[in-house]
Length: 82
Image (cartoon, rainbow, N blue to C red; front, side, top):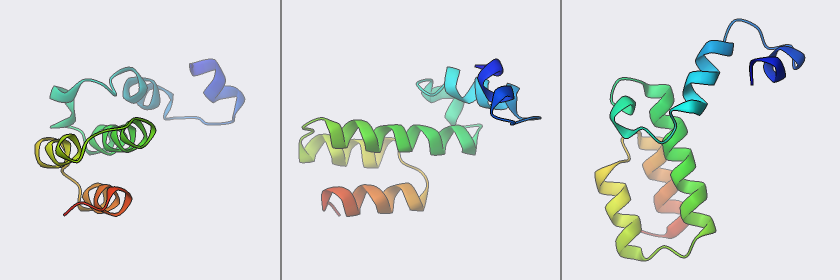
């Protein structure tokens, strides 16, 4: 991945991007990293939209994992839950 970022002309954040991608399924680390939390919420939105998640599952994820108001808003908007 570092080579890909360098070819894209992205400098100075290679280590951070690599860490975020490598840990985007590690819930414990999201408590200490807003960027990781945002990435994980976005990943949840995509995965829930691609799958056929029940309303109960969507509400569970909303209550147990989503922290950002933007992420919560997108989840509510996409799935029509309150």
